[in-house]
Length: 324
Image (cartoon, rainbow, N blue to C red):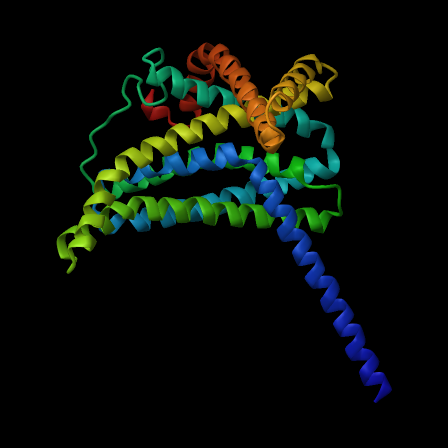
């Protein structure tokens, strides 16, 4: 009996350790995921355009197809690559992170420039629009394009998450990265599904609601969705510039070029402490984020010629040769 009790004690101890490890993984994944806010919000803002023009009953299947592709991108390709970097070439992570930060700055700045009429953006190039009569082929093409776009954003998300994970053993890093991949994918594409179907829900409420209030809410949803999508795009763009700028500034500090980072920190500190104590922390954070974003915008605007004239045509030539 004493041996059986001892066995139960050992099992209980192992269960506690396992539960603690799971809590650690979830906690680290949540913290790492928040670092990738800019890419995550942009992913959620960009994806709905890939289901525009399809029948309502095909929207969710397309989103599910993109979701599976996103999970494959993260778990099959990017997670192993991230673990190899972390364990065999950790010195490569900061440069890759800065490269990803530069990409975020470029993407965000290009959206701003396009909105101001200063850039044609990704969508405008000769031969982009082709007429495809077969809906199934068009659906396949749109899903494939979304998955390719997701790969770039997922690479940035996983790199940011990897850099945010505290030093640990191989399996803890693997479990945390896998948790980040799954949590972010569910959050992004679950949100996309809700956004895409919200106008259908509003239309159903407006047409079939028994109460006047229900019908009014439905009409309100239908009217509000275009503005909400526009707001989401603005928030996503701002988040990309903020995150991208902060990544570059932090990377420069690690490389020994900390003047800009120190200046921004001192300026944010001065602004925060010039205001009432109750809002000091918030205003200090907001000021730093705003200055990081302004830097990200300036850097991104400088990268637009390189991106549009060199990188984007090369990318399309490799991955979409028929579009050239």
